[in-house]
Length: 193
Image (cartoon, rainbow, N blue to C red; front, side, top):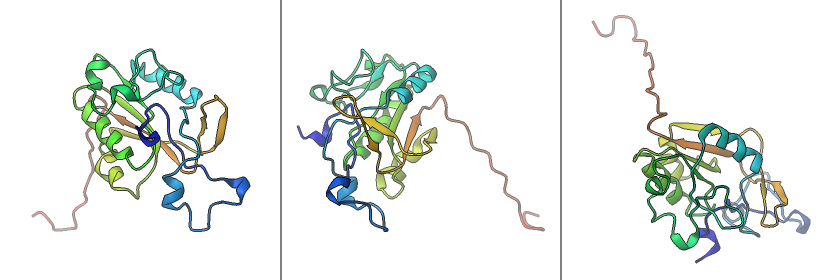
């Protein structure tokens, strides 16, 4: 199984600043955004603790034994994309910090589909409005919570990484939390008579 598909951590694009590689004035390249020197970038504990206090998660949908945030978690061997999260969580809230790479859209789509079964699924991911997966699946979230500033993730040895190369957000998929959207449209004078 490739490291790109290992659950339980966010695979970050790491730029080797010390080797003279940096961000050009035009921003990040696809190679930078979809590559990583390390593969194990775990959820910042402070962020998880705040969210867990709000949602009371019962399943970590993508984890390895050394970085699982909950006793109930799905490892790569169990293939989280093929598992029924709603069943494994007994209908309770699910946490997901997916592997980041070209397959992240599969994880966001899975999160949305699991929410349709009745579970709330909270996903930590990059804000990638320039991708098809964002428009196809992230926009279906009941809430999109933008995280101000850049996150610092934990690496495999539990040390902090540098700042993430892109802005992060939380996608909250939940049919229970979805609110109807009401908008008022002002008609031009004389219209609708």
